[in-house]
Amino acid sequence: MDALELMPVRVRITSILKKAIYTGEYHSGDELSLSDVAAQLGVSRTPVREAFQALEAEGLITLRMNRGAIVNNIDRKFISDIFDMRVLLESEAAARAAANGMATAELLERLFELRDHLDTLNRADYEALNQDLHMAIWTAADNHKLKSYLLELWNGPSTGRGGDEAAAHYRESTFEHIAILQAVRDGKAEEARSAMARHIARSRENILKRYPASL
Image 1: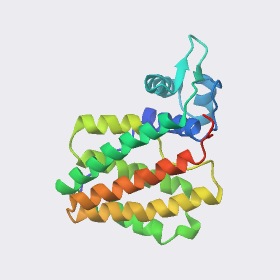
Image 2: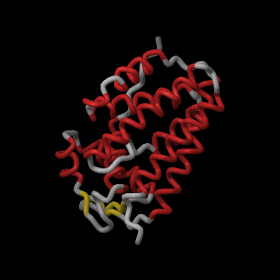
Image 3: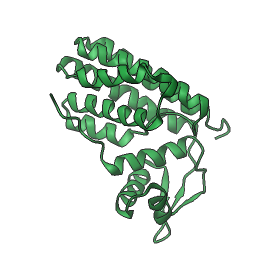
């Protein structure tokens, strides 16, 4: 049995901040403090600094010398373009994982357990499994550049700030994840590609419907 690879801390922090920008928790012009973010997330300043650098490289924030960072003005097309790239790259990764005979038994078992307890779905359990599943697919695709690009694009669960809508997204995503992994398990590369493309496209719509239309 292959061991699951953990998502790097800096990537997880980057995804948390990215999602906060995408969902409007952080607005254009807001100042982000390195120390405050580190304290809020319970981590050291180092991975937060690395996350800030990644966000600046992507155009989401502007770093200020010794003064944290400022959130840039991000329009809907910027977000849509990011998710278009995820659709292209992650659907290819799913197809390659299927062709490469990715081991899926452990992840499917966890997904079935989650599916059978959707009424008491724990957000932390969902997010951990979500990360594990996507990372496993990227790794099984067996292309280090493809995996590197997908790590840069990762934004975590594409939901708002919680509530019934987030729970509905977790439920729907659980069934989509099962469909993706079953296609991968059965070596059906094109089915895996299509299932992943639909999954990421729905995530894009989830984010965009919350983003201000005026931007």
